[in-house]
Amino acid sequence: MASYNTMVDLAGVRFLLFRVGDVTCAIAAGSVVEILSASPVTRIPGTPSGVLGMINVRGQLVTLVDGGRVTGDGVGRDHQSVVLLEADGRSIGLGVTEVLDLVPVLQEDIAEREDLTGMDSRFVRGVARCGGDTCVVVDAEALLNWVLPRGE
Image 1 (cartoon, helix red, strand yellow):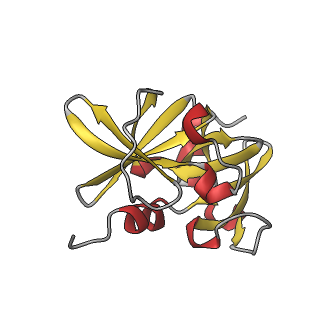
Image 2 (spheres, rainbow, N blue to C red):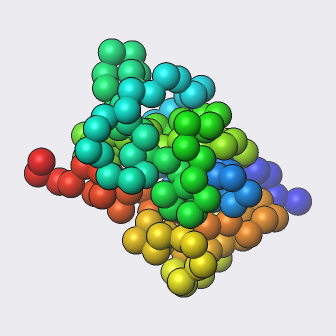
């Protein structure tokens, strides 16, 4: 029987599993900085639907996006955890219902993006088998670009 480390090496890509409402999602672990407990949100007038506001992460203001923006199942201010994402010096928080696990996923197990009812296809990379469950694979880069476009 293969060890867990061998399985991770074979997969090459680890994903953080989380729930938004009743939907299980996954996001590449390489874009995850940390997982935080829900904290007070300061609503900013004029922000797009799906942006809950700003949170303070050790003195740094971070835009908090409703995980329901991806799934169509808005969590709103009832999120229980924040998945802090970062790429190219840009950071956002993703409000989620529950963080589940960190699992390896083979690239070939990720099916091409489909039109999923209620999902915002701009933020969905595909669908995969993750830890024995079917999950929606979220595109962290697309989320970051939507909230904080490069060069701005």
